[in-house]
Length: 77
Image 1: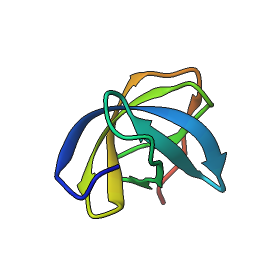
Image 2 (image 1 turned 45 degrees about the vertical axis):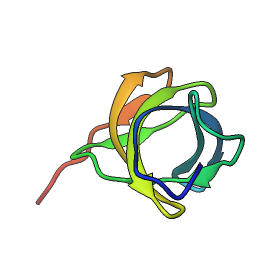
Image 3 (image 1 turned 45 degrees about the horizontal axis):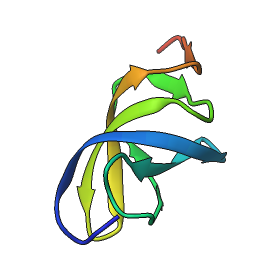
């Protein structure tokens, strides 16, 4: 992904730990491991379409556009 600000969809290419490695659609061939910025726990699957934003090699997931992963419910005590 380029050094400019990017806000848009990105495809999950791999999952590293609990973070997705994504590639922006219509962007460069570079990939980035994104941080989560959503208020629920989501376990991504390869091929998911996520909404991301970021720049300078740091990206955050702000939404799930189309996912085959699962939302994990957890109790807050």
